[in-house]
Length: 429
Image 1: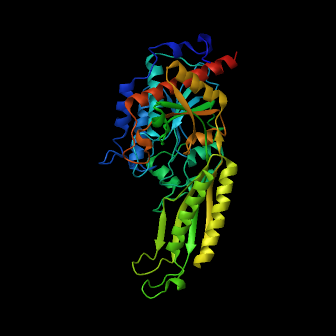
Image 2: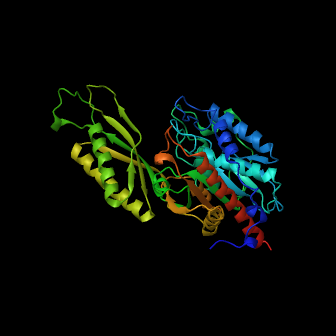
């Protein structure tokens, strides 16, 4: 049931207080000048020079709107617009500006720039909120350069230690701490939910899947995120000549790894879960020598903690069995565990209410991908909004959401934030 007029602030119902779709689209593509690729996609890895440039641009944009800027020890940027009562922690709009190495223009970027558009709308209409409103750029959400993903929001939430995160190294051995110093984004504020508390966190994101498009819907209220676990599997075989070693005498690490990958996929399919491998490394990298060492990534996901636990157990059993059959040894390093997340019901309801006010039919979805909102949900009420993306394609230069759908999502986001602000105002009476 939609709220009555007195349940939400007047700004929510003023048709003038609405996002500017043309400006949002232009700003999104303006921000993509840093890291754009010839095919129209993006390669803006966390803390590289393009990330430095877009961060500096973002800081200047929010300062021009009267926001203060708070940067923490992981380089997370908090742009804060004052409210009537600044003793209340800000209501945040958060996402990320870093991309995959062959990524698109919408994943994460839209969420931050929809937040910037919300600040512009509030500024130009002189809307005064009860609580401060913050837009947050979380560092290294993608995990493409520094693993694991969402590490900086994880430090903020207390899931990772600061030293662990700042010492994570990329493929060239450069650490997050070193690169934060190099680009000038190591802030003085501790990276902590106590040093930088939030009243709530809302995130707009492309769906990265096909469901909304199949339902012909522009938006969804996201109710949670599935459980995820990441592994590195190391297979130790024996390098031997491919032409002189009979099949029965081989300890072929590559063949073993291939069987393990196929087996994990079959297990996941049977359980109604997901198992994926995106990285394989082998040595000695010779055409006529059997691989003696192979490592590969394994990404397991399921809708519940119990199901992902079963998936992991059965995959481990399969890895061990295949290793014995092929005469190789196997090491399993589980280096990231992210339990299933259920978002705050009040925050999610503000998303639903906002979509109804905007006249937008919506779905309710559980996210298959991880987001910074997974970690903020541990420390403050959190909700997400998805918008439709063409073909469900993401992490790809072809990633696309129409300007109309981007604006629809931003409109729902703005309304949800204002609705939550009205909720806080009512609570404080």
